[in-house]
Length: 407
Image (cartoon, rainbow, N blue to C red; front, side, top):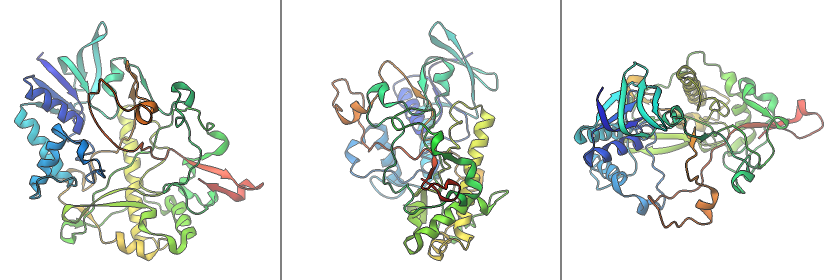
């Protein structure tokens, strides 16, 4: 068995940077990636970098990445990029640094020596032994296999004295319904709706996590695009609550009430969720963090079918205002992106899963009250960004079967 200095588990952007940094410092490094691609979300569709007024925070290998992106587009630095450009950069990085990459290698377990990882066991029964291990996965599979403490879901406000923790009260937000919609029109979404008396009280914790989606790359170049197909088993009934919402909005309805369409180079997009019924499939992510590989594949497929069906519905169904149909109808799935998966992103947007509970746990106080630390190891900046968790049915009259609304 080969012994490495460092084993990095998962080839996310963070995993690639960790592996390359260690290798450039003289370490023998192996990068173990469960899938077939490097870069995670950065090469998986999220090409519209949220960079508003944050440029001065970016340094080190992160800035080097954006400089390499810029070089591909004839610029000194670029914040937006096509997915295949990002993946190509990451591949070049690991090759130049001499990192050994093992694709398609899912963790099966670890062999512990006292309280340290002795070796990593993969699904193909091969073993990896290293002096140090890095869990760079979105799911935290290595830390869980090693018996490290972790949390899933929302902590209560009382646990760490966080006024914004736990379930939040309903607040005005672009992702809330801007017009009332009857729950009786939920159609195929009914199984995902939560009754008001079945959810925790404001401030209480639960094991529910924020929603997942795919960051979808489309192209306006007809010569490079394929028509958006319906998923297998497509049923427009799944989107009747959206139809009711668009009807309630009336002339106010725009594409931004459903999708956030970010522009990328060469006429491509980074599509994110943009409204209360969007590419996010609320509730479908809850089982994912601790699920087995087969269940995770099913969850990913459910999100893919939901999002692909949503795009098809928005471009073909007459319940959708013509302006929205026409705007989205200009786009297709790009032939030169995600070639192995027919133009669909290879990475589910796992916004949150297991969270390591180490010697120090970052809390609201660290972000909002006392952000200046004498022992800082890094610098970053963004708003506290938590996506919606669930659709809730709220009775608004004495006849709830008739007058329930979805919030």
